[in-house]
Length: 240
Image (cartoon, rainbow, N blue to C red; front, side, top):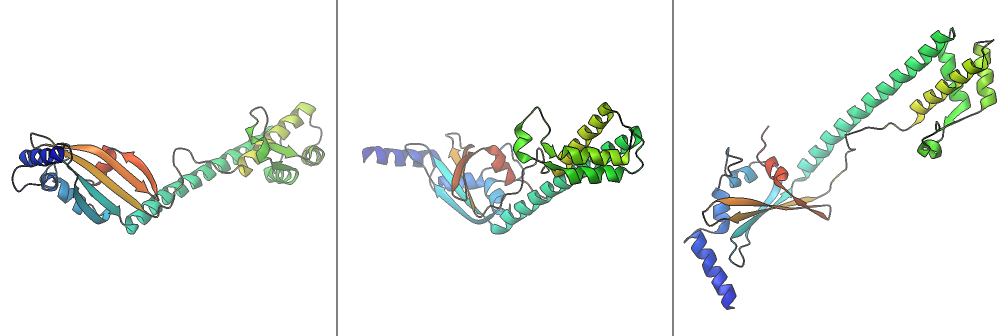
């Protein structure tokens, strides 16, 4: 009991009469974000649908938390933006694959004087298929072919090919099937994930010289909790 009374008195002495930890935090302008004070940043950020301020002072440490319940419209906008970015990257990846396939078929047709490169593509798709199970094998192409049918199709397009020439055509056509049939991979951009709920808690400490320090916080997203840093805080100061 005595410890509790001492802590409460100490907190009051640090803050001064009439000033709570919450008031101090609200009015303070962080040196790294000089455009506005903390309260203005939080209230006008359009991130939160509900905001609560809590004095969390304890054991001589004067502190306050801000809890922000992120609005459903914000979560949807984030999902839509990330999904659009991912789909764009996916389409670009598909276009690159199509270009590679076209170049492979064109080079084959020119090298072996085959008049119809589309026929090359047709027999590749007819006699070969992508084998996902073999994709983990680093030493072979993950494509299985009806070798008899494939070689017969090649003979029908160009008679008199030497064995090594035919083997080269088969190898390239297998790569064409691999490129076209393997699921498109998008690097560096994650697929959009729909988030149903997000609550952000920001933690601040009132120092003895009346400055305010941001001490990180917590984000609970669809029931999963993680610690957050200044990067999340910066989002409240961002303006379009």
